[in-house]
Length: 316
Image: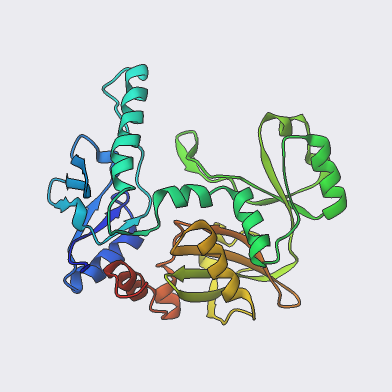
């Protein structure tokens, strides 16, 4: 089958990574339909029919219409959530559920479409315990990690594996005085652990005695590895302190990367590693919707072209 249809890009309006990819596709003459599922149904509509040939019909935005059977690829980035502010709480919950399973189900079932990544596979891969367990199976070195709601188990883990850091298991929107904040990775001691740990699940992990970090971006079968020097526990807290160096992965890492994405059914992944003083790479996480485009101007790596090739379906 030829892939002459549009690329769907599903994301929020403010997404610089999507912007540069769309610009590259536009320069190649590849049609693009950009949408945010959070705009449904106010400014976006869908009419999909299930037939013996699969899903047929259209998806329409104020400026574009996509013929669903001919969508060549879907780039699933970071759409906003469904919202029905004009409804009371009970009816809004009902409407959100119908939108999720209706529009979401259509977008997840397009025939002949390459997903980067499929939203269901993204959901699977976003569970940190699943990712860490898969990383072990795929051959990565993974720091000892505890997921717990028990204060005593946490103290015992710190005593055995200290120094230990705390990481959030997920990063939903968190506001303090109306300002959006992030929960930072931080080192914790046994003395800091109290009964509040029992309030929910937490992730504690042995701190790697690292000298640098590495962000590995896998796009299709292409691997782009960048060493990040910062002196920070969490390099995401101060981008102005970062320096970048293109590096080659040590033996075995590339094969493990491909095993990992194959395990979850992904074609894209943003992997984070800590590099210890002996040069060993320790797997920290893989974000199936991670950021990556900011590194191209810093390194000269042709990452935008690689993503456009994948979405155009010039590569597998």
